[in-house]
Image (cartoon, rainbow, N blue to C red; front, side):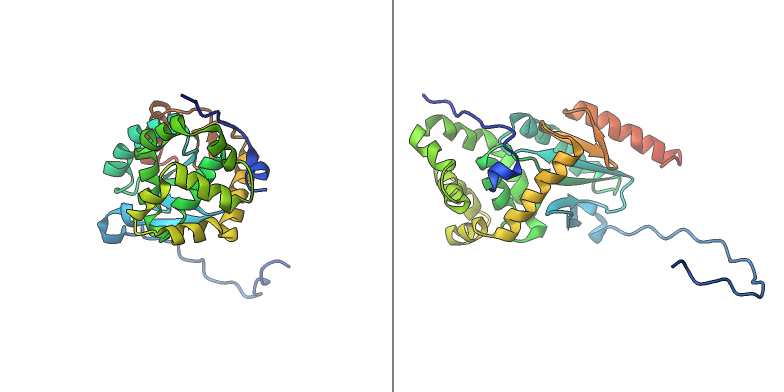
Length: 253
């Protein structure tokens, strides 16, 4: 049985070929102390309903003004990313995100054409349902990654040759991605149209440039409040989140 040989760290290039107005002369009364802006309310009382597209087509769930802003840089073919997702997602979704304590932003860190194919499909359809699609790829990773073991050398060769839409169609066929997205109401024709969406492709390419500037090379990688972290597991990320929330309660952030 043939084992799929991953082409890591391909990079985006390989994957997707004067001053304010003057003061008045007359003295003015001292301005009243500024009042702290009222905190935003969660849509429907739960911040899980807040999903936004940010930056170069990254997706954020939760309170935009959360005191802890966790950014995840992930590869859909990365087993460690799937493991992190299965450990972290239930805890984040049950407490921290709904209460507005933590927001989570997902950015792609591509390692191979399969990652790109999955990324294009997670961006296919209503942006508000991005996390439904994103979660499904990680929740079922064991199933569709197992199909790699039965693909032939000839099949895999098609994934690395030709124009990108044709390559992604071959991958979606061989790994049953078309069947997966049909469950979300995305027809094969719609999926193929998404593969051909150059604007989305360019945004995902730009994500790789963002990742490179941050110096991230392995998956999963993380930042909290825009500060890159040198950790790659939920235990370490959870500890950092707890510490930041403690600082926030103490009035330090």
